[in-house]
Amino acid sequence: MATVRELLDIGVARLRESGSESARLDAELLLAFALDTDRTGVIAHTDAPVGDGPAARFEAALDRRAAGEPVAYIRGVKEFHGLAFGVDPRALIPRPETEKLVELAELEIVRRLVGAPRPTGSPPLRVVDVGVGGGAVAVTVAVLLRRRKMADEVEMSATDTSEEALQLARENAVAHAVGDRITFANADLLPADDARPWDLVLANLPYVRSDALPTLPKAASFEPVLALDGGADGLRVIDRLVGLLPEALAVGGAALLEIGGDQAAEMRALVAERLPGWSCEIELDLGGLPRVTILRRPAR
Image (cartoon, rainbow, N blue to C red; front, side, top):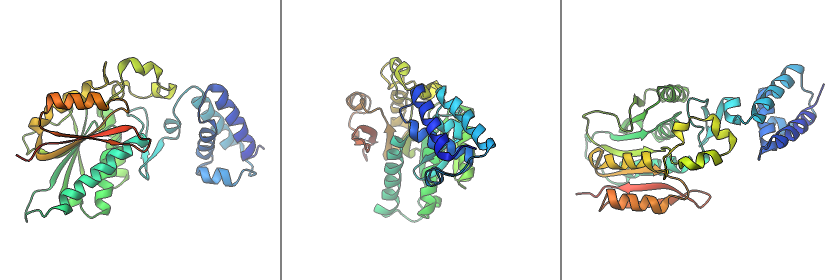
């Protein structure tokens, strides 16, 4: 019977040979998955024997990873902003960079609810997550608002063109007990309704340039191409959303749009052309790269 250490050594060697750039981490996560434990348990008990069943599950997981499948899809879960999200090929795997979008969204909502007095009887803030995918952004924001006891002060919606992605987002919302706090709609960008304008628009839309798709890590080929392909300049879908904001965003409202790390100049030019007079700031992620564009509609 092999030990944890022996299986890890086999797994690391196998994944390195297949081209994995994170062979050690991948092997630890997949062995933890096979053993129904966490990575800490694997690292802390390297001399423990591993039964035939878990060893076979580990080997099968290694086969899938060696073929390029993302670890998150194999495990069926991905951690994001301290929460565990169910993931599968219905939607893009949440990236750490997107946590910046969530942080800024929380700050924006808190600023609007706490930073300035609101008249008694004011309607809830209207917030929409455009292109919700598996729900990481909308669900995390809803959880954060619940923790702050602000959930009743925000009306949150989420849209996607993929009904399969929306179903995954619904599942994640229910898993985190915010299924009743988010209205999901199958829509091309913004939902078609006659309600009052949105106070805050959030979006992590496709922004990879079409000609860059073949250069992405092999794992990305397992994800929905529509969630990645942003057209020739990477801003095709974002440009469409920006064009809707004059009608959709409330006076004094804001839109937080995730972009690629090399798209700051193009984004500023797009906003200057499409939204003259609007404020445009670009926040950096932890890696120091441009990540979130903050657009503010002037207050009359």
